[in-house]
Length: 265
Image (cartoon, rainbow, N blue to C red; front, side, top):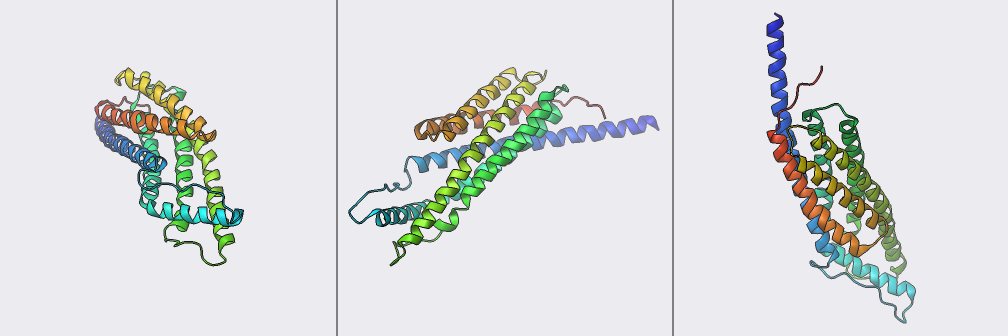
């Protein structure tokens, strides 16, 4: 009877291991694709590849008229690239949630009982949720941009300026939330690197890449909070289009090959 029970437990464990291989691999590849889409679409917007951004111009008409004209142009610009905004702010949250799943899969499959495994999942979860919320909050601006404005309605200067400043307020809220989320994800990736390097059946260089990605993401968080546009674009390219996708693809491949150790039950 004991032999039969032990065999059933072994079969159940082996099936769980295979399931975690699949889940971890799919989540890692999904995260890689999501981060790449997010970054490419963000850079297309920043560098005005899809549609030129308007600039504020002071005229003799007065500050109210000038600002209303600027916001009317800005709303038309955002309407023209609405698909870009929606696609990237959906891809981003999907990527961060997938990264959380990767952390859970790695915790299951990596050997050892060090605190870095638990901290990895905790930090990736907290940071990933914050970063996803920041993207979804910014997506709320779509309500202002999804319909063409067609210029300034008669006597509507005050209203359009109020709406424009409301979008600015949403932007300001998301900046710090996103930056802090990046910091937590960066710390989670550092713990991920320590977990990988402490594993006997995962590539040590994968852990080094996780450390490098963590440092780059931390730098991105800092320049984002400082509103350094050029530095943010450069760090976004390095982190989101190169390091993060490479790390996730490598993680997916490694998780698919590793053999999970037996854990105490």
